[in-house]
Image (cartoon, rainbow, N blue to C red; front, side, top):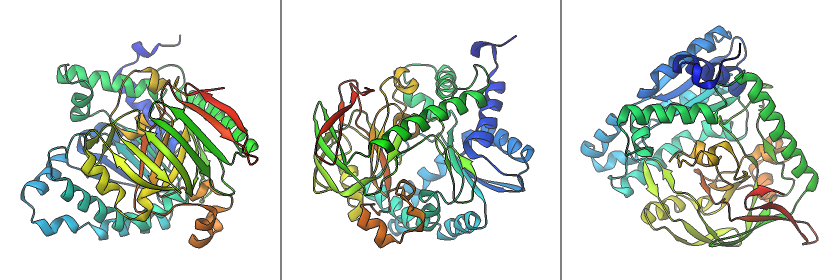
Length: 415
């Protein structure tokens, strides 16, 4: 007898999520080390993942926990100069682990409103310090040199932010239900479900790679935007074979196909369709105008100062490093929830990302120098921040090299 999702306990679903994270998301190899990061409230999932990692033959699982309360204590009591400091030794150690063959798994679930009442300037400085320190390790991830993945754990603070009118216990249960549903947990064999979904995303990416569009044109409420694609760009979707030869699906959930835009070929106005939770601060009503690839005007109805500091991180922060297409009918979109978490919200709508490009989305990108990548249009930055522009009112055309337009998505659905 096959059990329905409602007949499976949360403990069993947690076990399934951990199994999928290790065997499908991460593709962990026997003998491989695993470096995992997680919020303190995600301990039950982190322990399950560690169990499945060891069952799969992991040689060592090292988990680094983040404490939201300790983070807030920093903003309350630390001296001003402390916000230009980051634990460089920690990120150097993570980079060394990745270079020696370790896999990377992140559990997301921190409060999306954690730093909403803190000084935006201090938040920006602290984020920049971390970005600088983490850059060598992050390069190995953005170049897909290692197998890595991100999964989510429901946490009390995140649940209350999404369901503010519910009792905390009910809000937490609702968030777990939403996470399980959107990560294909609880109904049938989740490993089989994920492999079928991955195959569909691969087919969509292959279709776009055959088309070889020069650009995309977006039209919708507050949006009239042309985005050129990088020379020799490659569309990707679902899983990928990392530089170490292991197949992984970096985001769980994932509904996107994505590629690298040309850093100098973005023109027009783009309006966000969902709020952005950036490092614990909400930015809402984002609208920006691009000229020759660079943001020349940026506004937000809430959090505009944070947005301004974000795009001032470096020159690359005003340019785009990723473009992704997501149908409006995705399970995350159909849930009707705004998760206030990029892992989920980016898979509810087509989106773009400011900052660092994924060089794996350039043909032979792993073999090119920074100068060669830049010549093809790949952006470089300390940041990589996705924000959602898709909605049921957005139309997207593929633009050929002869400047002809072909309907690609209508009302954010594949034509």
